[in-house]
Length: 225
Image 1 (cartoon, rainbow, N blue to C red):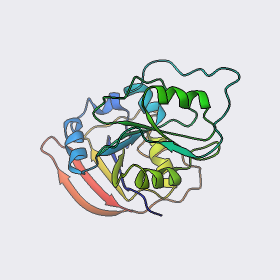
Image 2: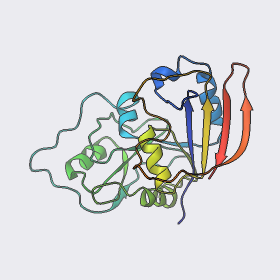
Image 3: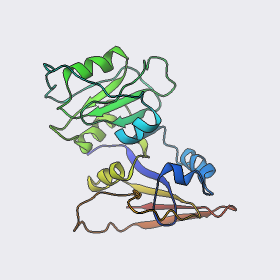
């Protein structure tokens, strides 16, 4: 398949936790964006939960009772750009503002279970979209469409542990980039860099390609799959 080169780029504590409220309190948070820029990834992708915390408006979209599911694959590109901000929102629940003049255009990836009403809502806000997968998003197909129709050649997955694990499980990641902060979280139940795969899943072996230490104690690790 033809797809973008995909890098999962995250900052974590030495026990693997990635809660943003924690990582901003330990050394390395400043280097996170420095290292992200060094990866040369004009397009970044996050999941619904991260988008709800950091990007979208408050509240959720409420379709009418009669709203029909879209029920087919499709895409709509509102603008050409060197890079995009991609958000995975399976059922179409996030609220947005008009995207006509944003510096980095938004692209929302949804499943075919999304309502036609929500797609009309995105259209009214000039937001690009990709719809693929019956009830769950087909990430491999979405990657193909990002490459062929949106011209995305390199991108970073910078979402939650769940979305990172989904791209790993789908065999889409080419590289893992970790900024390791010199701090410990230790709180029970906090998500890790890759999280939520079924018990019995085999570990994924990586190849270390570079190690960059920083004076504040942070370390940038890069691996290929």
